[in-house]
Image 1 (cartoon, helix red, strand yellow):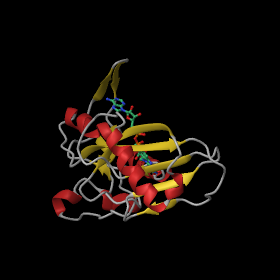
Image 2 (cartoon, helix red, strand yellow):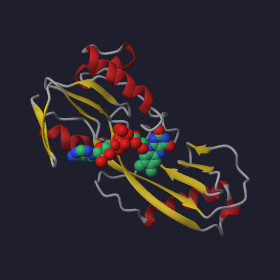
Image 3 (cartoon, protein in one colour):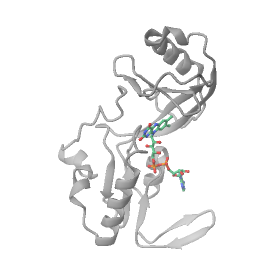
Length: 199
Ligand SMILES: Cc1cc2nc3c(=O)[nH]c(=O)nc-3n(C[C@H](O)[C@H](O)[C@H](O)COP(=O)(O)OP(=O)(O)OC[C@H]3O[C@@H](n4cnc5c(N)ncnc54)[C@H](O)[C@@H]3O)c2cc1C
C-alpha cells in the first residue's frame, strides 16, 4: 500500500483502513481484495408521537421486528434486512406493509397510529454475520467491516482495538477470531442472534 487518491488530492501512506460499511466491497475491490460481503438495505421508521406507554424495547424473533418508544413519544420500529442485495437507500412501501402487519399482531391498538418518517441504510452482511477485522492479503490494507445490522453499538471497542492493531502491528486477542482468513480456514463465528431480529 503506498497511498490513497481522494477527491481532495492524494495521500501518501503505508497503511489504509477500509471502514466503509455498505460500500466496503467496492473499496476493497480498488485494492484488489475480495470480501465475502453482500450489501443489503436495512429500513426503519417512526410514528407520530404518542403519550408514554412503553419503557422497554420489544423484540420479536418470530415476527422479525423491534419496537421502542423514544423520549419524544415516537415509536421507533424496524425489522430484518431487505431480502435482496442493493445499494439503494430508498424506503419501500413493501417494508412498511410487512412491518405494520407484524407489529399489529402484537399491538392491535396501534392500528390508527400514523407513520411520520421512514429511512434506509446499507448493511455489510458477512456469511456468518460477524465482522471482519484486521489484515488482508494486501500488505498495509486493513479492514473493519461486515458489522451489518449491529455495528453502532460496537463502534467504541472495535475502534479501540483496531487502533491498537495499527499501532502495534499485532492483532489484539479480542478481535483475533474475526480475521479475514477465517473464511479460508473454515473458522466461521456464527452470530445470528446479535441484532435480536432474525436475519
Ligand atoms: C435502519 C438501520 C438501523 C440500525 N440500527 C442499529 C442498532 O439499533 N444498533 C446498532 O448497533 N447498529 C444499528 N445499525 C447498524 C449500524 O448503523 C452500522 O453497523 C454502523 O453504523 C456501521 O458503522 P461503520 O463505522 O462501520 O460504517 P458507517 O457509519 O456506515 O460509515 C461508513 C462511512 O464510509 C463512507 N464512505 C463510503 N464510501 C466511501 C468512499 N469511497 N470514500 C470515503 N468514504 C466513503 C460513508 O460515507 C460513511 O460515512 C442500523 C443500521 C440501519 C441502516
